[in-house]
Image (cartoon, rainbow, N blue to C red; front, side, top):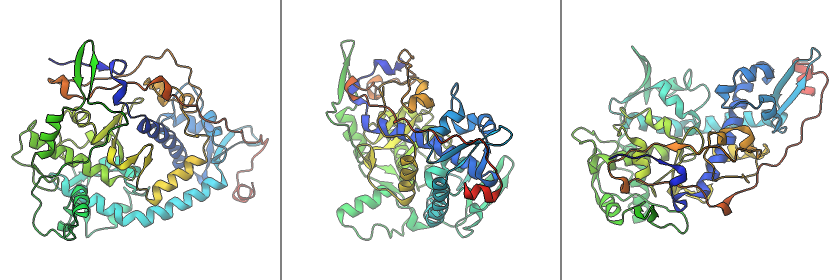
Length: 435
């Protein structure tokens, strides 16, 4: 018997408020960075607002609000002016220009680390190759440069190479590095146990018997009651059995595993755990993981597995696209270990009108992706909650969801001052620099 549950019907205890705040913060930043990326590709880093309006869907900006309204929300990053012909233009502010230059330096510094992680993705994949267009989905998440597809993929010929197949360009592993075939969980476990030689494993990867760190929200209880029946988020016996299960390393050949078996599922959890560790913020859009089901030998019902292992992962279901977090990597709303590129993103966020106080965090309507919602102008109190369709033969093993308690609502964005009106804007280079 299968069943679907709407967010309204799920317990409040399972919702991790801090990670929902982190999700909303990421939504704001994603939209702002998309506009910055678009502007920096333009000559003089300026473009007519009408062009940005055309690119609305690529920028993740929703109707009916105007793009001009969105960019004016962050006058420290974007300048909006009218030229002598009456055409409205948007451009990067001097502060944004400086941030663009800083990001380029940081991406260059991060390049070798990113090359290691991409190589390890190839080592996990069954064919030792991945479509370049698919890897590109991880570009910002893994700190890959903007020219990843054209220049960067050719920079490390000793690690990987570009091959052209019938269905497109692929990145293919050139050499296997046995020292990289050690999972992040193995390294952390070794650090805790004092095994200094754990990273120098010469033998091929094989079976592992490790427990995954689990983290739950404050006042968490393992069950809730709905319509007089007890439903379990986490069954203690099932969890203990799962943690004791021996599984194949993500870097080992997965042949012979039976889909749906405990060993298959635990290996899939290990693969997702490893991939999330490769990301800057230990978070991914779940769509990006599902693109690699075949390559990484993961189950068809990947979302079901993520929800089932609540405590290892946390799935935020806000808006149109869901995000999965590695819970051990967060302390409240904050990432515990922040690399320079994450701190750079925080600088960008500080220059927007976002101040981390969002109203109506309990809502799960698609409007939570809208600019008015993110900037504290949400009036969609009657909006219908979105539905996560999770189907399972064992309903007790699926982690149910819930809205936030009323007392966790937050204030909205601060109102940003509008840039000064400019009647004319000379767009040649010298005028731009003197502006």
